[in-house]
Length: 155
Length: 276
Image (cartoon, rainbow over all chains, first blue to last red; front, side, top):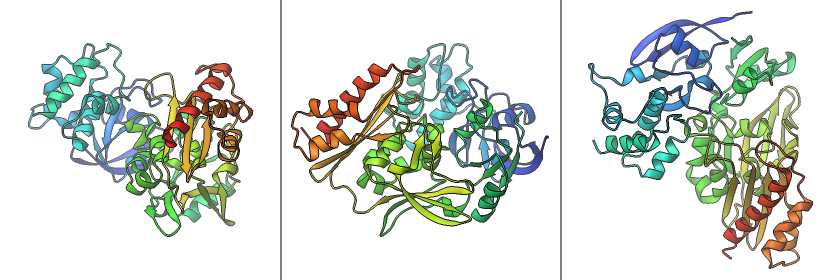
């Protein structure tokens, strides 16, 4: 049994209508159907945060959302942060502070950092630790990531 | 790919109908336990009933009865709701320790208790606040005390065709402070090895503990010693929790470690709310 359903949503500012498999997660849909591969697949049980995207302005683990659930909603992925070909302040700060080695966790980290800076303009180290605690970095770049988020908050 | 049918409910009646008439129907609110459980083979869902956008389940308000938390209200909404911070801080603290910020943007209080994990971080706080669970179904409504809601690991009192509609933190609110203390392997994003909620009511305390028995439990022996027998040695009072709990050994901690941590956290919690 494979069931499909038509949904309409906004992705990175563009209105879309698609048929989705009801058995697919949002993560799979984003990568395999929308071909936005910046969003990464990690643990797929909501523990690593590599798949973090914004849904109606809030960060969520896209591995724990069904694709059909985004009907009528607004989706923002890492690809949607660039404006006129220019990286946003958090992306630039991650580069300036070398806040990654392999880069696999970076899109999720940046989405969580963006959500933090939207609710707390000048976060403390503890605020950053808390907000990013659902995003794992196996390279261990946590210190540089914290510095990058702090620097971005000052721009 | 998982195989199931998906129904976005237009109202609660539609949800009750499906839950009652069909087999292997699972309500979807936050989905953070459901989707993991389906992928891991714990839940064999044939029909997913999406109730998360029903306005009657999105209610988060304070009224004459107390604080009403609808089944689709997320843990982040609860942890930042002013009446909860003002009158039921222990619940805000419990809700705040579940998973990560993105998880709490989806996960709900109702889902946390319906999943009925002995380690559910909101269960012990609800117990010390005397919360009431409003259950609805095609055969009507009933209210169950949170103390009677859990039956065993992953099991609760819901019958086929029933849903938790809301949870009530009833008035009168406690006039003392409350605290949730959690021992876990990592600083965040882990289930509780032991979770302790302590709430002060006048000069009495209520204590509940998670992850130390088949369900979250009240530490009645500790409460009795402090409230009725006037035990001033709080370490001794906390040690009586051994009569109330029966922990197991698993990957998060041994039986003996859990006994020990329950005692330690109960003592610390009572000291904190009694300002000892």
